[in-house]
Image (cartoon, rainbow, N blue to C red; front, side, top):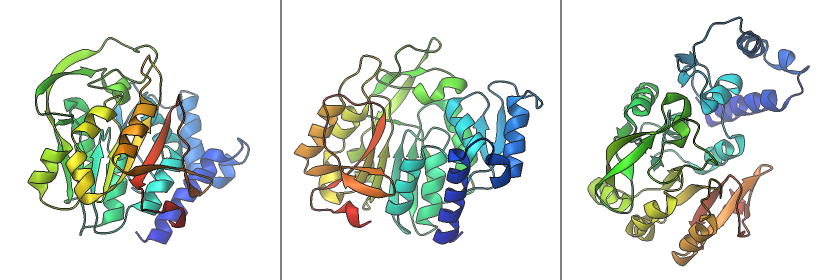
Length: 296
């Protein structure tokens, strides 16, 4: 799929998502009909059941019924439009990309499409049940490697919270970014790895890192200082002060100490981010202070 076709398909899905209700059946009759049938209960789908849906970048992508990220992908063919568009602009053919917290593999598969078969995608997902589905989604790409580790500040075995398939987006080593846990978490032991250790074993330059790890971001950063110093990749990080966790500003400060500057993406362009004291849910892009993303 060419870059132009991929971008065209992305904007078609985005237009559908942003359209007024009366416009949707004209923009995409098939998607509208499928969504209405599910909404009205005309299609029996058990919560937690797996099903394949089309996305803007893949003809089939496995999702979990009732899981909120899956429902967004199923309904619109995309997730987090602004972050997705930022990745479409930043990730280039032939690059090595690291995806920390791959969930079902929406971003890992997008990265695979963008880097092509001369690039590599290394995705980390410690939850066995989630990893099984993400491997199904990424199996079509020989250059995507799914690693069964949690990325952390040191190498150890540590307790991990697994909220089950319907709430897998909140699985975490640290406190999940949610005010109240939706269901009791199952505690499982997982093996951790640091990004510096991974980079040493890889032996190649990493160009891009995406981190979505439910409040473990500062720990991950603590174990990635050599990688950041050597490779100076662009880094996407989820921020958000909720559920009693308020460390996003400290995370921004940590990057500043490493000579990385924060950027945000909105309205089709990158602009320098002005640090805040408290953050709602968002994603920031960090790049070497010598980089200018406004030209991307």
